[in-house]
Every structure is written in C-alpha cells, then in structure tokens.
Length: 296
Image 1 (tube, rainbow, N blue to C red):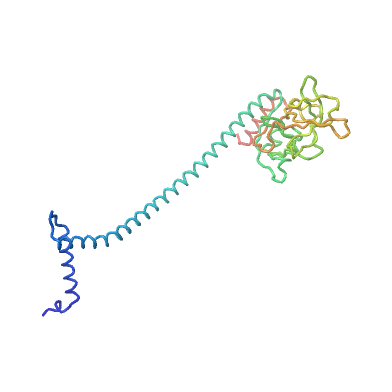
Image 2 (cartoon, one colour):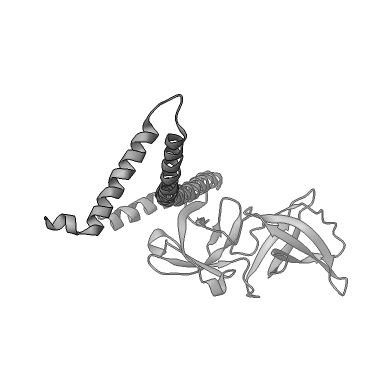
C-alpha cells in the first residue's frame, strides 16, 4: 500500500479540503427553495467566510490608512517648503519696495537742496551698543566728505560727519548723549524763535531745544529747522516738530521737546550736505571719483 494512504494527517487534510470546497459550492448555488441541510451548509460557509473576511478587511483598511497618512505627511512637507519659500520671497519683495521708495525720496530731496552739494551714501555699519550715537557710511574723503558736514535723510537731519577716511565716514547722530553736540535751530512762525538743541531724551525719543526766552510764546506743532547760525549746519534743514514746552526750574528759559522728522532708529540711505561746494562742480567731481574707482 502506498505510503500516502498510511499518513492519517494527510488523509484528514485532504478530506477537509474536499468538504470545504463542497460547502463553498453549495453556498454558491442559486436556488429558490433549499433544504435545511443545504441552508445549514450555506449559513456555516457564510459564517466561516465572515470570520476570515473581517480581519482581512481590517488589515487592508489599516494598510490604506497608513498609506494615506504617509501621502498626507509628504504633501504637508511640500506645502511647508513652499510656504517658507513664499514668506522669504515676500519679505525680500517688501524690503526691495521699501528701499526703492526710500531711494526715490532721497533723489527728490537731493533736488530740493538747491545749491548745496549732495552726496548720497548707504549705511554699512552700526554698533548695537552705540545705536543712538554713531553710524558708518560707505563714502569718505575721496568722495568729497569732510568733518562736520551735515547728514540728512529724505525726512530730515540725523547728524554730522564726525570723522572720515578715504572710503568710509563716521556719523555722529543728533540723538547722541554727547553734551558737546549742539545744533543752532529755530522754530518757524510769524516770528522765528531761536534756540540750541542740546541733548536727547531717551525716554520720550525727543530732542531738547533749550535756551528759549521764557517770555516767548511757542506753538506746539511748529516746525523746527536749522538756523545756520552755528557755523556747522547749513540753514533750513528740517529737524522736527515741537511736541511739548516746559519752563526750567528757575523760570528764566524754556525747553521745547522736538520730535525728529527722521526715524533715527531705522536708517538705510542718507545724504551728506556740503554747503561750501558748487552743486554742479561737486557732482562732476563725484562722477570723476567713481570713474577712478571703477578703473575707467
């Protein structure tokens, strides 16, 4: 007798497969009237199929959910990268628009300076520890810049040249706490009111226009400009507006708090004013200097 028929386990497995196939066959038969044994077989087969189908369906759903989660994660990463790129581009565009507008205003201010020679410059350095005192610009003595020349923005006066070398210069801001930094100024009105800007109130962010006679009436909101009497700053450079007026403790003089026109905290481009040069000659000299630097 063959060895196969002696193996009871294999015979049992074969019989089980035959029975299972028969049960499935019975369950697939389409009859209107079935006997109770056939109905029992169909119900049993359906129950067995349900037992295996439910876990299989669960596993399939889990795999699909994991695949969807992976796809969602990858899509989110791509969207984050695109968002970061958009923010970067948008920030750059805003900075370029701001710089473009500032340069337009600088050019317009240069034309408004009349016979004064105007040298445009860009801020290249600012010490965080001395933020309110000095800045460094990219123009020096080769461009016609000298000590004590006035420095302005398109809005108004910000300081004067403290020192210069061939290619760069240091600017002392009007917000410095140096007591020697004085500006002869006047408040415009029916009758001009003269005084000296001496000091800066760091708490209110305002300049202190002192030595104003006690009996002079000062209008809040009045425009403050350079008087040209100090021998350093040319006249009629805008400084700011009067925000408040207080009488000193002895009642002999008044002090006006002046809000600067220029934003002394955020400065990018400036104009150095040279009142001693003819404007046309200075412009020609500046072009020649730039050509020499370019090797033309």
